[in-house]
Amino acid sequence: MSTSEVVVYSDARLLAAACAARLVTRLVDVQAARGSASLVLTGGGTGIAILRELRNSPARDAVDWSKLDLYWGDERFLPADDDERNEKQAREALLDHVPVDPARVHAMAPSDGRFGDDPDAAAADYARVLAENARPEDHGDVPTFDVTLLGLGGEGHTASIFPESPAVYETERSVIAVRNSPKPPPTRISLTLPAIRRSAEVWLVTTGEAKADAVALALAGAGEVQLPVAGARGQRRTLWLLDRTAAAKAPNVFRPRIA
Ligand SMILES: O=C(O)[C@H](O)[C@@H](O)[C@H](O)[C@H](O)COP(=O)(O)O
Image (cartoon, rainbow, N blue to C red):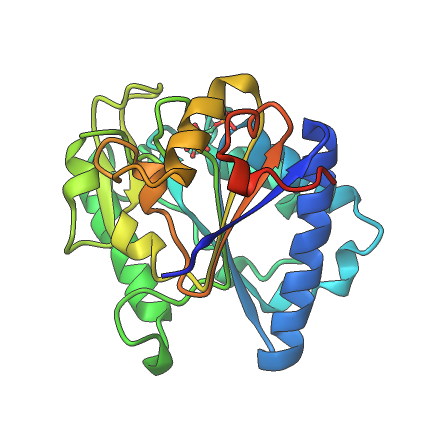
């Protein structure tokens, strides 16, 4: 697993714009090398702000959107048209404005979809989708996601994996249902940490003073059971993209120049 790299930006808007620029470059490079690319999206304010900046990026269409596989790290288990759905927010922010291939947009099922209000069935189906899209070189039932975007909570959750929850102990399944989430809504679908760790690169993106303790503890080596975001690592790269306030308590060794 990769060691953490940290880049600090002076404010949240600049972080979102710079992360969008990084994404364009990374996706273009991967597509140039392999013909296609894969990106895992996150919910939350920072994750959606990045998608809006990507939509407005002048270099946006350097990405071949038709050759991009899109997944979600987690989803709020709500009706498809609920404004709180990560998928709906991502479509409004970006996906409805670029020529993605609908067959390559892999959304997690809503609570009014073909699995009804059964989050376990919806989670199992998403695990099947991941397995179907894994290639032999991925060595398992989860694709090697080129970039996985993840937000984090002030108490250290990432995706919908919360401290000391059943999700954080999951070692076999790639996707699980989450109930009684401390962050509303209570029922969610989430990749597990083993699935997240199949990523080539994990980009942890967050802003705000409320996240500073979780960032500092993760960078200082906290355990994933108490701080799930500490277990979100890429095979080749784990990149923390922070604004100045979220980085304020980071260990000095990580206190880099502020971009
Ligand atoms: O569905 C969700 O809520 C997200 O996946 C969640 O993991 C989010 O990324 C963090 O809670 C950070 O959210 P903010 O960026 O809004 O603080």
